[in-house]
Image (cartoon, rainbow, N blue to C red; front, side):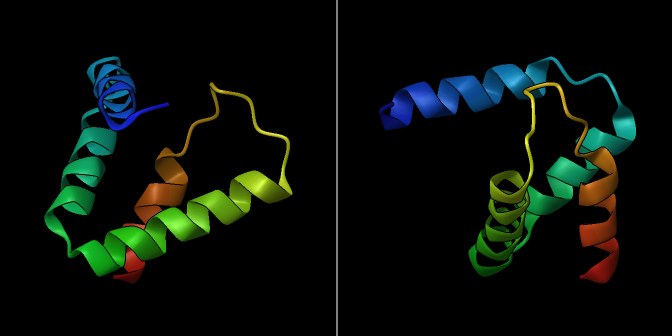
Length: 70
């Protein structure tokens, strides 16, 4: 998958989100440094690799906990 396809997929997923708290958490992630975003994504990727996750899993509580720890 090329960069443009990835961006479009991410944008589409964000558009589908109706939860204001989750959107605020995502906004906070985007406003952090690239180092923190990389750290968060590494943790999320590790979680995905260790569990059988379907595409509808709700990451909102995971994101909220990560934001609290910053």
